[in-house]
Image (cartoon, rainbow, N blue to C red):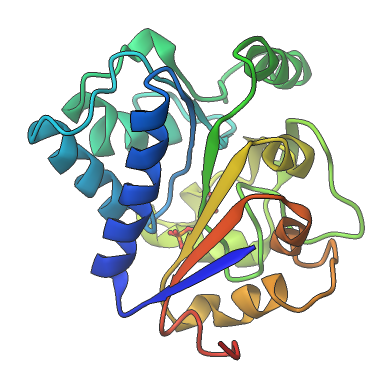
Length: 243
Ligand code: GLP
């Protein structure tokens, strides 16, 4: 696992975007695993800049997102589909029909999860997966627990995550209680993983990634088993690491 510690969020966004750009330049048909949350917004802005400067072409990529809230309409301002459209897709030349986000409105959620994994398989797997991290070590919506699921599944969000994500909603009661998420097995199958974290609130979770111990209580600690994982953090998120 490679650790890159940078000064601040701005630098983190640039370094992460460069890692992504390298993958796309090497393989213009890459399957890009994307993430939501506050952390990737700066990186997406950098990728948009690269596209505008004609350094990057997204016309042949396919994208797959990690997760989606159950029950939110794709047009809902806090749905992850809406987030992706607003923060990235509508600013670049990606073919929107080749952007995949789990459907949180599916009548049969179990079937939707199965289809999502099949779709990823059919695409030949994910070339590079972006991850943020929750304060409690969750990746995508894989919450700390005594056991973790390998494939895409429906999960109940922890109170910690509901509280952390309440900042995006008018009222904490509006935060959905369940989500569809890619499982840790699906994430680990990605050929390359880039995890980004900024700020002191992530320091404890980041410490867990470099603890030398793998535990389901910190789902991100699984990354220690990956062959090509890059963790990019700012100084505040790296606060509890010896580097
Ligand atoms: C949500 C998302 C995760 C994300 C996490 C951290 O729960 N499902 O994919 O990593 O929030 O978000 P932020 O980057 O806003 O701290």
